[in-house]
Amino acid sequence: MTDVAIAAPNEASANAGEQVARAGGNAVDAALAAALVTMVNEVGLVSLSSGGFVTVQPPDGSAPYTVDGWMDMPGRGRELGGGTWDIHTEYGGGVHVTIGPGSVAAHGSLAAFGETHRRGGRLPWREIVAPAIDVARGGFRLSSASRYYLDYVHDSIFGWDDTSRAAVHDEQGEVTTEPIVVPDLAASLELIAAEGPSAMYDGELGRLIGADVLERGGILGPDDLAAYRPVTRPSLATRIGDWTLATTPPPSVGGVCVAAMLRMLDGHPRGPWTDEDIALMTQVQRSVLGHRLDVLDHSGDLERDAGRFLESGSTAHVSATDSEGGGCAVTVSSGYFSGMIATGTGIWLNNTLGEQELNAGGLHGRPPGSRLLSNMAPTVGRHADGTVLAIGSPGADRITTAIVQVLAGFVSGGLTLQEAVNHPRVHVHRAGRPEEVVKTEDALSMYFGGVGAALTLADGHLVAAADPRRDGAVRLVREGS
Image 1 (spheres, rainbow, N blue to C red):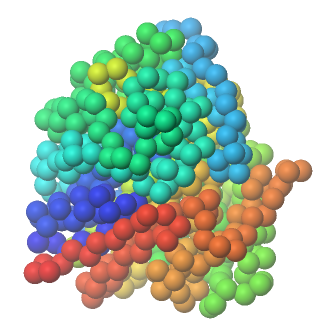
Image 2 (image 1 turned 90 degrees about the vertical axis):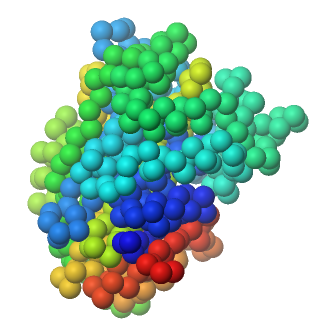
């Protein structure tokens, strides 16, 4: 059995990672199994209708790669527009969100999981999906992160679709405290286990989802899902001391921001955080996030513009590493959710087209088949001595700043992995704009992300760290334990 360290968003997802590790799985198997469970029980954060990225450090020490399973723009051969409406929520400091059938993009997470499993998994696919089936069939209670979000939007987003409303509300119309069993969800997962990820694309689930979205006035059709393909790219690498850190390349703007901030920090802090380190972190965030708002979010050629920048200077995450030297970081999201469950599937659909902060070109402003922008930055690292790290975070535009601050504290600041995760954070909101606010964390708050990190030291010792800001859970699975 391979020893595996796992950091996951909740106990059930950590249990899933442990289950497949004890069955002989490696870091890839454990991370994918844990992430699939979050697609069941992290309601409002992620679902099977999600996009994501998987960054992998191969156990042989070869170059890391990222499997891009982010969302595609749908609408092939159809008139775009319609099927949406806007809401405002105070969640996350206040955001405007577009929801409804017309906000649903072509999901990619399952396609990316299938490709990652093909490249680096060990156990049969069915065993990777089995824990998620068990959670869907047996029911689950909402996590604190889900409840926190639903307290804001249970009516405005999750209340307009009858099936969705029934799933998350009690008889008084409040967010339920009882175990949730979403009709048809376990059966959908059983199809995915039997047929593979293709069930969500050119299989029955893809056809059901596309037909229902079109019927309700959206633009995602079965042809958009059948045409979806994951893309594997070399990860974006940055050298910090004896560490090589690798994260998501474009079109994930998140990875570009992580790499740029790490390079501009230039190895700081070099010990316990000082006032000067905090000031530098704020300055770096203002520079990078301001450039993102000014240039990268509007770029017609993100690879070109990101390359020039680097030369010049709602989500869930799972991390896993193993004793063979492998690492796997998985971040997935369904946006703020469209509010609808596709008829006959039990699957809440995403609203990624309606994430206004990611779609500077407008709701349906990109050509069908093109990738959308993402904040995600699942990251792996390899030290010169062979130590392997996997790290990432949910948290919308706070993803990048959370990851960078933890990496800075751990890689160069002398903190242990858990100390670096626990350390108070700062975030520059709307950098460089008249409404810019520098938010500092006085008490731990889920606003500042939910970092999960796993580490296998050169001597085989396992370490995992979960963020106290959320219901994170860790598992260290060792042979004979």
